[in-house]
Amino acid sequence: MQTQPQRPPDAEKFSRSAQMVDCLRRDVLYTEKRVRDRLFVALELALAESPTPLILSRLTRDAANYARRQAQRDAFEFSNWEIAARAVSNAMLAARTFLAQNGTALEPGLRAQATVVASLKEGYRDLTETFLLGFLIGRLGDIGTRDHVALAHALFRQFDARVPLADLEDRVVLLLASLHDRISLREDGIYSLLDDRSPAAAL
Image (cartoon, rainbow, N blue to C red; front, side, top):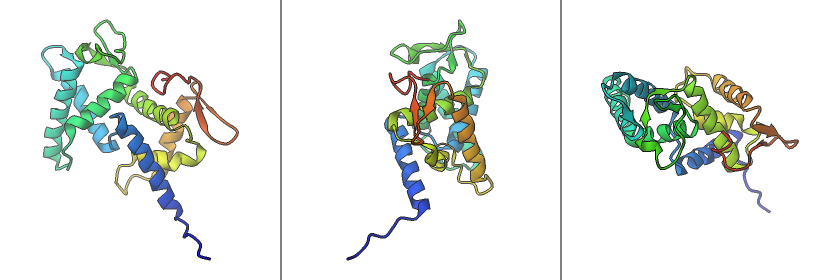
């Protein structure tokens, strides 16, 4: 009787992180970490340098153009800036990090794209990446303590050997700690959202 060969642990981790990436992609939320960071900078620049107030849809397009031009100057190879900018914008909107002229956060919905963005909420990068982590916990429903490495790969992998994987795992743990009042850890080691309405609503 033949036995099925066991998959190496690394293959299982990459398969799990690929599942997480696919989950984010389906809702147009996924960007690789290096691209996400470039778009964060581009959004700040687009807001700061625009002579007139920008609605969210225009801000997203301008950020994609800023990021594309800077990537060309840096010889950073990436082509889908429009889709990536939309994914970052979607995550930031869901995390309530875009602020309107009256200082309130833009709410997801039909009017969001036509609303003027006056500024970005303090700590918006952490808030956005915390949202992505909470979204995965809520949507997949089976993420647990065993998945920290897979989460690090899915959300923060930078394809740079100089960035230790341990640092990325620490980033996961720190963001999980910031969700202490919105998630619980079950006895079986699985995280679950305390608010079950939807992954986005809970954040």
